[in-house]
Structure formats: structure tokens, C-alpha cells
Amino acid sequence: MAREHPEQISPTAHYTGYVWYAHGQSHDAFATRQGRWMYQALRGANVIAKAARLPTLEGMLLARHRLIDQRLTDAIEGGMVSQIVEVACGLSPRGWRFAKEYGDKITYVEADLPGMLANKRRILAELGGETEHHYTREVDAVIDDGPTSIDAICGLLDPDKGTAIITEGLVNYFDRATVQTMWGRFATALGRFPTGMYYSDLITKEGNGGPMIVGFAYLLSAFVRGKVHIHFGSNQEAENALAEAGFDAAVLDPREFAEALPNLELAGAGRVRIIEAVARR
Ligand SMILES: C[S@@+](CC[C@H](N)C(=O)[O-])C[C@H]1O[C@@H](n2cnc3c(N)ncnc32)[C@H](O)[C@@H]1O
Image (cartoon, rainbow, N blue to C red; front, side, top):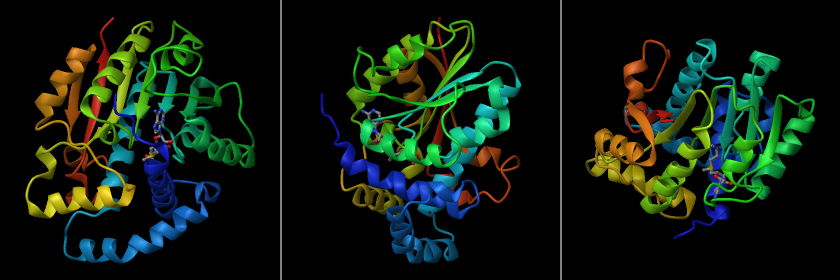
């Protein structure tokens, strides 16, 4: 199995962490020096692209983040989900925001590899510390068993409560075989709960054809100093792969949620899709 080196993809966690902060979705504790530096370095390109109505990286990142937030909120408010494991959480403020909003009505586990998790632990300590309902756990999404597997983390949760796994900014850094096996592992881990949801962003060829967009994928690849894998030609292909892994899935286009997500940058939003999947029991 080809394994990406986390040190190649983790710099983007600093950048996206800063994008959320710069757009008022976060607390300044999440804004790292590295994130600020990267944000300033890319700011000119984003401003020019925005003025020309071209997709911006910021627009894409905000769209994916906001639609996952919105679908997760619906699942919580609808009583389907009250436990969340965010795998590869990076410097995402989502866990902190949802914990603040829902308190002990939910349990939110922020999970990542040890290097990145150390940042998150420091930030949460600054913001009042971890609690029984909002805590960090080391995870390795590409292993089957052992204490840092997704199965072990889900095994510590209440089996009678609806549970969601989230990945954001992870899937397109893995090759297709790694993604397929990871999704199978997630479906199995979620199968023990009355409802098991999976949310993720996904870049497909459908949203990313044409020379402009090849450039966009290239920018992403250059940015992460590694290869971005675009595995699926269409939403249907991704849904089929998720079905094979054990999910009933829908792949959503953020532009269709523009009414619920005011001020969405449509060009950037069109470059990303959001997976909403239910694990078959
Ligand atoms: C591009 S960052 C995304 C972070 C955050 N979700 C975001 O949207 O900004 C990728 C994250 O994946 C984590 N990661 C890489 N390989 C992983 C693995 N095998 N298991 C869990 N997390 C992993 C990295 O540590 C990093 O935090």
C-alpha cells in the first residue's frame, strides 16, 4: 500500500486552519504562524482569481467546510447523530465550535496522527481543556487494528448512539486502493451503531475538467508538495465505490446548497463535492 507522508500533507492543515480563522469561523488559538505565513503567500493569487471570477482555493475550502457543518448540524438536530469522530482533524475548529454549541448533548472526538494532534491538544488546552464530551485521540486511518485504529476509537463510544465519522482534506491525498480500504474500515466501525454516518469532501474529475482546472489541481499538488489523487470521474463512480465499501451514499454539490450557505463563492464551491453516506448494518 502506498502511504503518503503526513509531513507532506500537514502544511495544508495550517493553511486551512488559517483560512477558517481569517473568515471568522474559528478562534485565534487555531491560527498558527505557519498558517499565517502560507495565507499571506497565497493571498495575492486568491484575490486575483476572485476578481476574475475564477475558483479560489479559499472559496473551495470554505464551501467544503460549511457544507459538512450544515449536514452534520442537520443530523444532530434530527436526532440521528450524537457522537462524532473527526479523523485527520488537523487544525479544524469544528470540534470546538460544535462542543461549544451542543455541550454534553454530543461527544466529539478529534483524531489525528501524533504530530498534528500535539498542536490540537495545545490549542484545546488554551481554550479550557478537553472534557469527557470533547477530547482528542490518536488515530491512524490506514491501519486495521490496534489502539489507534478507527475500530478501537469507535469501540470506546456508546454503541446505542448514532455516530458520524468525518474526514476533510484527507481522501484526495491517498491512492484509490488506500481510500477504498479506509472506507471499508469506516463502514465496519460504524456498523455497530444504530446510525452510522460518514461525511467527507471529495475532489472528482467531474468538477475539475478543462485546462483552468487542471491548473487548480496542479496548484493543490504544488501546495501539498505531493500528489493529489483524483480517483473518480463522476459522482456516480464515487457512490459505487462507497457502496462497495458498505455505504449508501450521496455525493453532493455545494452549489446546490447556496441558499442555505450565504455568500458561497460558486466558482470555488463547484470544485469540490461532499459525501454523505450511511453505513449499512
Ligand atoms: C490536509 S490536512 C487536513 C486537516 C484538516 N482536516 C483540514 O481540513 O484542514 C491532512 C491531515 O491528515 C492527517 N493524516 C495524514 N495521514 C493520516 C492518517 N494515516 N491517519 C489519520 N490522519 C492522517 C495529517 O496529520 C493532517 O492533519
